[in-house]
Every structure is written in structure tokens, then in C-alpha cells.
Image (cartoon, rainbow, N blue to C red; front, side, top):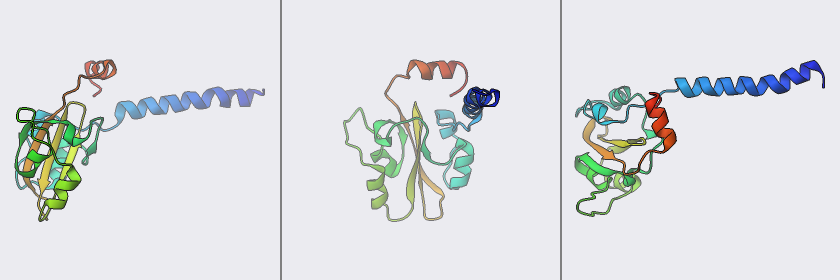
Length: 150
């Protein structure tokens, strides 16, 4: 094996590992928690909510929205999260959105919490909800939390 080929075989995986580590440590981490949920107010735009949370709606290491228990909710969002105290069945996000006369519900799901907002036709907040996860974090998630990389 030539020196150039050996350098390529050993150097390329090393460069890829370094690039992956840089991406992992610098990627945006949405703020899906109680503190940021409380900053969301009625009549805010979706863009303002995204600025508070730090990312567009989506799954950020979480579960399906129906897997979270109700911590706080308004309107249709109360049908999205589980009511563990009363055993009320949940509805899927798609089913709820199909029933809305106008607007939609968007959700951010994380390991511990889910934030849902109901938007009107102008993409302004008309209702909010906070769901809490029921699973214990894995050892890896606990390590990342301790290191401040969540």
C-alpha cells in the first residue's frame, strides 16, 4: 500500500469522526421544557414560538405526542395528550387537525416534555399544551444531561 493510500484510508475516517463530533456538539438543541413553554403567549406567531423553543416543530428525541401525559392544556390539545388520572383516550394529531375548522396544531417532542400549540389561520397561537413523558432517561441521556449536552 502506498503512503498516499494509507494516509487516505486512515485520515478519511478520522476526519469524518471529527466532523460528526463537531456537528453533535454544535447542532441546535430545542428548548422543550416547562420554562420555555411558559414563555409562549396567545396571539404570538409561529415564528415567535419557534424563536422561544429554538427550532421548528418536530420530534427531537421524543415519542409520539399521544405518549405524553397532560401537564397543562387548552382546547383540542387536551385530546392529544394522555389524561392518566381519568383514563381518557387520546386522538392522533392528524385526526385533531382534520376536525379543526381552521388552523392547526403543531408539536415539539423531546425526551422529557412535549409542547403543542394550536394556531389559527394566520399562524397565531390560540391554545397551548405541555405534555410530560413517562419514561426514565437512558444512561446515555443521563450522561449527556450531566455534561450539559441535551
